[in-house]
Image (cartoon, rainbow, N blue to C red; front, side):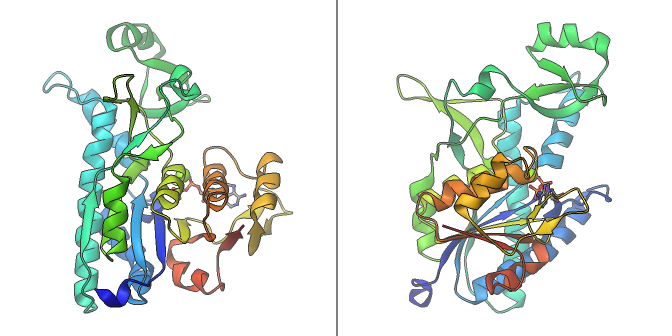
Length: 318
Ligand code: ADP
Ligand code: MG
């Protein structure tokens, strides 16, 4: 593998729509088919000698897992959210890993692929742990919420007229527990699938032990921390839109080809990038570029190869 020891190092973050699409049911066959489609452009990079870590979202999958837990709690013991996130890092990682292995095999490329569970360290007193706001799982009836709060300790809030739903912390990622081994594997040219769904949030107790948090970490922010910590050159965030835009939901919409870090921050503060969608991607870009990152690309899943050549997507630079 000596020929790839000089290849660029990048973290590729796969958006939720790369694996489940809004208009589909999201069954396993569709998830595999979408994964094959999403990995095409990534394998082009591997062929060109890139060394990669791949992260992915888990929004629809973790929602379904919570619905399964609720629907079966009279039959089998419930699994807490932190463990569901871990299950999905493994299950979705398997799906991406095997699809990657098959694609590499068909294209005659000899590179190893491994899925590695990541725990992500967060602050014990992160504001979102004290006041959770991220909606997850099934909807409940208003008359159930008192009992759910008492029996299970859930915090339940109204999801903008859609109904009552559990909220969980989405704490800010500080660092990744397994980062040294991830870095070593990536440097050797092994493709590492990790920090799926943002990784499993944990905090460090005063005696040094790790303790899990029943919450979810934003996958874009976790990807930025991973990219920083493995000293990647680039971070590629693959999503459902071709480019980042100003005035996104208006006739004055203005797609951007290149964006400096300081302009990104200015537009973020001016409200161009909403909290639940483009906001964390821009925050992730700023985080990474301020800590040694060379370039961030935000582009559509199919356009990665073109975007690397500056012919698609939005480039964010220091
Ligand atoms: P992912 O699953 O890839 O994280 P998200 O739905 O969380 O995707 O975020 C990407 C979405 O953000 C886009 O599909 C688009 O609808 C939305 N969006 C919001 N504001 C903007 C903006 N200013 N420019 C581009 N897309 C935006
Ligand atoms: Mg998102």
